[in-house]
Image (cartoon, rainbow, N blue to C red; front, side, top):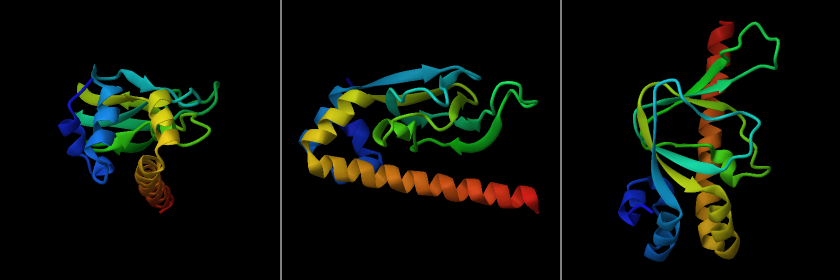
Length: 153
């Protein structure tokens, strides 16, 4: 469990009540990762929603086996304060990219199944979480489209 005050720092949770923050804090913990460590793998079930506290992590698209580029294509960077593994709250809850620590980092990990149960029982909580998750997805889509356009220029 973490402190509800730690969640309050993130705009993602800004419109939640004290009770809602406590419920989420109870299903959260801190995790650390070493440089190069794979945090989440594309195609796997999203078991947690993360918020980066320190360091940076990179998002990769890794082509099918047999591809020349086994390391994957970088498609984004997550900076402190940003969520990742957003598929934890968006069906079908399958990760759409591989997440790798670019250096030592620390994050808040929120258990996905428990969070989805809270969302199922609290429509206001579900709205806030889904709204912010969708916003993050759109921002990443825009960044990826910008990268594609720059690569073709």
